[in-house]
Length: 487
Ligand code: BG6
View 1 (cartoon, rainbow, N blue to C red):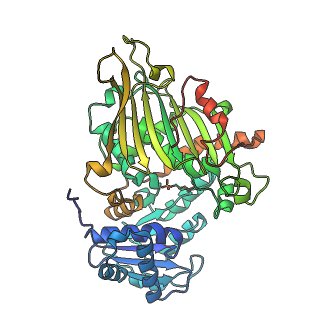
View 2: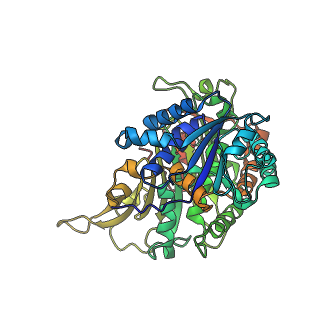
View 3: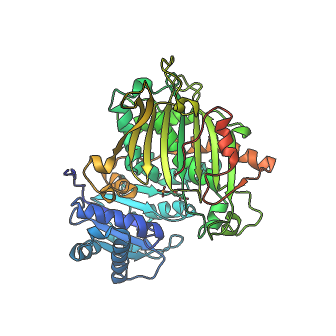
């Protein structure tokens, strides 16, 4: 299959934090893949800016290393990598002072698309925004890209929004949630809104419940100090899982344009009920498989921070009244697996003999959208087991791997950052969070976290390599449902 590559306009991209981990692992490799696809104009300029003492040659070396390390070896081509690295230049910048800014002002062109990627600590966002204006670097159409964490709670998110709004309009601000850039997440919108098949069933009348799972095998070692102040709720639920929930639950927007989509997502967040303490389970991993426990990784023996959480959530509107959404995420679990499962109700009247699948609590029809590791979808339907011997039924998955369906290797499916950076250049905000969405998400999350704090709640221990604490299983069992396996 030939993929369609639409060239983008001429641009200058400045990566603040250009020597950091995100630039090395995601932004630069993503740009290289777009370069190979022929999408970058010949005179594109990419400028790394950071505190490190690099000259241009050293930075080009950094760029080449990033490509060699983080792009699949099949795409390595010495000449191309060299030519790609020549698009880069480097400026030593002091985000809190004046060093480097005049030079940057001379380099950045005013008559092309300007994108400024703030791949730095959030406390520097305002400082960078201020200096882009002070040194007259950015034009009226310039785009700024900010990374999570976008605030720590509602108050800090509001402050950040206010600081950025002093210098840039909302239409210029691109808040990244990289989950929105994942192929399957976008496919979720295509499945729902480009087909007639599912939408009539997509409501409380036909959907029994929805499960959203983001399970990881990694622990928090290496970033324990950051994580301990954050926990699964702030690190994963407030952003990634809530975004997935929004896309699953939202009404069809009138158009596929940024504000129409984001208006609908915002309505979902505003329709979320407060969560009862008994509908949330928090967990913390113990040591296992030769790896340290959470408490050791976080270097905080008294930590009450959760590395796992599961919760039941209700969206109070006409479409979803009475349908529970179960959200679950955690570190050091049995497998790396992210999926959304829509579990449909059983037929209203079952004419066949009771079958095993009905007895073990599983429903007949499930639509499972696999986000990772293997992107795809499967739809479980009940069919007759072939052969004589009566009407024995069996559940069959109708499987579709995206890579196979498109005749591509899995590593050819664009990475989230690759897509998102190009969307910034194209000026398409659909896959980025709007300020009011982020604030609404914090507004829902804050009272839950405050409840844990005021009650002094402690997370339950769970074994590394398991599916999380027993209580998480009970959250579903008590309602006659069960989690899909993390395998
Ligand atoms: C990040 C979180 O936003 O997402 C990490 O801070 C988490 O804790 C990561 O590991 C997961 O992203 P992905 O794309 O690997 O699922």
